[in-house]
Length: 552
Image 1 (tube, helix red, strand yellow):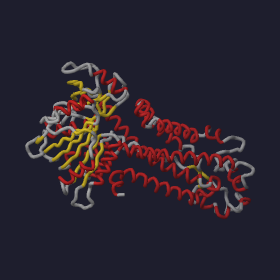
Image 2 (cartoon, helix red, strand yellow):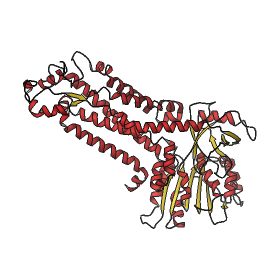
Image 3 (cartoon, rainbow, N blue to C red):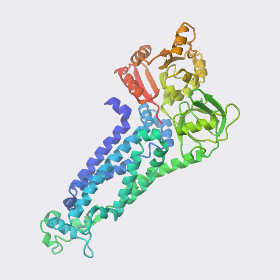
Image 4 (cartoon, rainbow, N blue to C red):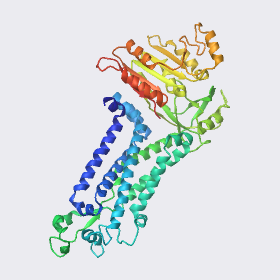
């Protein structure tokens, strides 16, 4: 449970808040005297509809905050967020966004089902077989100075027609369709196969929020007014229907719908998000100069750029836009340069239509001759790997192109004399060409980088090779330098034995807090998280591994 709180604390807290708010609201509408007659007509559908609606408002209030990148980056770097646990929660902003999205979908489904039942029960309450009390309540509003409880005024209609002619029903239908579109286009398959579809449909959230505000204007769920409750004794009058309007104890009850409340929930975060987008737009207009383009093996291109006022820290990332390719699309890339350099750079590997187009635009140009296709840059933003320098001992684990977050960190080691005093670097690649991306950097860092006793320990793993490579490696296995990488430390073949590696690190640094930073796929993430938990001791003075994963 403690690991769950540490790793998913904010998400767990949000689920608990949803459960608590749903329960409190459900009990309120199940017992409040003002809705006694409404419950007679709708049953438990009233409480389910109102409780789920309140939770929808809550989640809509929160869902934009974790995708406000500037806000998250500001909180992460502020003095109030020095706590390791809090920083870890901020690094999981996208996970939190998804959890809130799941909660929003769940409560929306409950709300829709509840109201479909309510509309049907409203309609049945106009039937001659409905019963005396329901017919009496449904007839209210037919005369002047009467207020209605049942929004369906005749039995000679259909529930579908009533939904389409009512503001609440029509707006509810629109936002339900919009939500369904956003959810179905947010699946991992759509994001990977057609990111543009995901990007465009996700921006229908504007339609959803506007429709949500309009949705409450109709006020189809109504309760008895406070003034009416003072004069109309519900417990007595519901048993004496023939006395309604004739005796002082039973005047005709008056009903009204609740005032629209959704706008009160979403106005502040919406304004904050508008400011966020204005800031992003302003920064995207600042000119970016591409000073150098370097083509690397395995369809990787390195872009070195400069921008006035650009300041970065190791491990941060930026969003890139290329108007020549797609004027509305922004894609995240980790910065691979050090803050001490006179430029900032990213390494882009072809992994889809957009990156393929970017590669085609820039890879033909190399050295001093620059491409004429401009880029827009938004950022930089904070990420988990910024915390490498907060530990005396750090472990960086990269898979393939996942090495890019640590390129900036490794470069910065050449300029810093503080933490980490020891850094273990694991890089797992499928083929030998991938090692050429940062070979020169890694060679310069091998051994003692600053003369202050700090060591970088390299562990390079090659997971795929052919027969020719195997013969060449075998022939030169006794060389002082590794035949694959040129390092003094030899390349390992296959996959790491993580249990053995973590045990060795724990034995070498007793009583230490060790930061573990990963940029790789989900499969390896599960393994590394388990290793951190397994090899962390329960005592306060023991070894503790702190897992951190790069997320964009």
